[in-house]
Image (cartoon, rainbow, N blue to C red; front, top):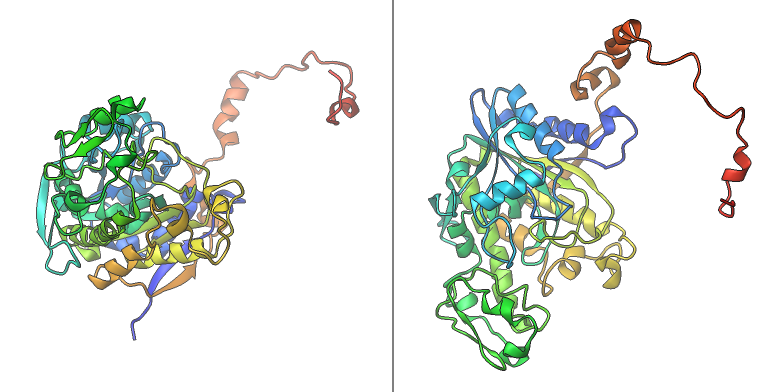
Length: 447
């Protein structure tokens, strides 16, 4: 019988300093013993998604800064990191390190705000990587991990838990499996040049394409970086032998359905298995006992922070989770999300979901894949355990609150001398003699 892995949890309610979400994140960090993975002098990667251009649901910079400060207190040397992306969308803003750093800074992430360097782990274009042999993989038998991550001494994986159109949900496994893979690794895990279940044999529906008669044909004509898509007068030709699986043809054509069908199910679900294998490769690169996981189950949008918008959350905030096991922490989040109520007006309500029903299989996945594939595959390849014990953590006591303050000195004591030098409050301000509040209190009040 397996011993359940401990997952530490605090909900999202806040009533005082020590129950704010940043203090709660730091409290579960300590409760889970994540500081134990960091030795003095360790170069520590803080792996997170810094958000796409104009999306708004990504992890707020204050969380990442607090983790970096914590790492420095422990004697580590932190750096914020992520990898470049595939050109999965015509206007994606993170396909090169140049664009990603511009986006990150606009979203609030810079060396100034983080107090440490920001390093795009796989280099300018995505080919600075380390090849990891993966005989344990369910499907992938090798994977390419961003060099800066592979060379780190330790890693804190800071994850925004939410839905995902291809991975079904985005948690710690996806943050590891997709986020640590170089661009070359992303082509691998998304099954480029796979003549078994990959894009090179995926079904498509040219009869649904209007060709050059479509008002969006100019976008589709320029979708493919290797010219595998040819738009004709009344349809399209997909030269699948050229396809490198960059995904750029999926989302722009989702309205007409030329590249979407239930026949893609095996491809997308195999990609979910590959995400778990890729996560194992990242784990092997850094060291299983040198990685800690924090899931922020907040602003739980149906799709990933990869897209340039953020839909209404599916369910209310759950809280913050911490563990040394990427499978257990995701399983805990999935279980709590399944039992959660839904948010009115969200995609979850549109799909008639309710408490007790898997949320992401129905409201996150592009074509309804199972949300269990990632966790099952990651458990099967040895990346972690689905068996967990959820441990609710109490807030720190009031006498420990100073760790969450900018300065333990009360502000009244700080500014007392300024009032003594210059009293800025006059003996009286000019105001009306009295105020009748009754005329302001009612919706029908006259102007």
